[in-house]
Image 1 (cartoon, rainbow, N blue to C red):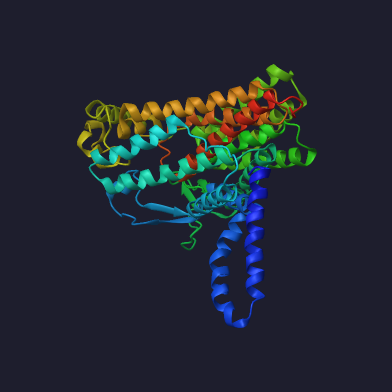
Image 2 (tube, rainbow, N blue to C red):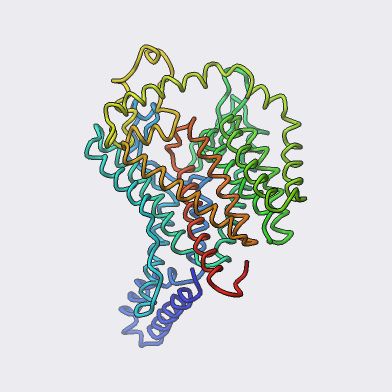
Length: 479
């Protein structure tokens, strides 16, 4: 997305337009063939437009909470009900990523003969993708593994695109803007659901799915909006709200900070309505990290006081509901996770190297049931790390953890650079990831929304780290 690439793409587009004009100006007898040529070239003309990449990237970001898509070859069987991915996910993100990489290709062709930056390669992530793909060979159900591999490959393509294509501060600000808009939109959807959805509510089967579930027979609804289950929605909101809070510590203008405060108010309420204890804890941890590190560098600033006051104001009206959810009887929900973790350790003990195959935990778990699971809660283990270990082995979980820790290292390095724009944003992204890493100890998070958001943020932190390095090496650059 740098200026030189946009100029080169623009020159290519101008060339295609000129060819079209010349074709229209020819005699009618020759226009048929020329018109066909113009029609064939028109997609490349669109891809060469400077605004197209940003539009497609915005679609990818907005699709994280909205989840427009279908599942092909969906399997209505017991395995899907036990937590496996039941189909091949084809979404707006899939289509937009294809367009983004096609646009990259057009840009490379336009710059042929000129020097251009090599694409970014993250070795741990590449190894994780390779190892996950290799596990198809040991999977009892290779078809299920393909569903998982496809989803992971899509997330990796998203990461590599963002890490390579983001070249300027303006690009970073654009992504943050779309993240803020997406969070505002999803928060508004959940708040509207809070006002309208009851246990008796039904809605038509739409491409845009709405998720809500009742807590026992209490009539109290847990809301997931369009993201998915309430726990998925809470994870999405937790990471997004920390980003919104970090905007307050940047040198962006009053409009930005006002928008972030509105987002924190709406998103904080939406997070409460998910009734996700893991999401609440993740958000509390993220905000603690953000405010403590911000206080350590800047002192007790007005911005920290504003954030803390706003969150306290949100807590007070819902104090009874929050305390009931945290301290009340959860009907064995938390306790039911322990037998699943023991089951995961038994699977890991039998399959330590390559695991049982991607997306195959639910396929093999029946052979490892202990007495506590004969009539208990059966589902994929509610711990992302144990799930990755059981399905991809020690090599897979090592690559996975190395990728995550490397991402946090980039966030810390960017925060240490003391850049007035990038450093606070990096701190917000890093704090959000820290909270999510804790949340992953109690949830499997196999689906698309959380993985897509985490990989997007990781790619953006990689690009921001590069920008901070370039700023240090370039005298007089903004900081």
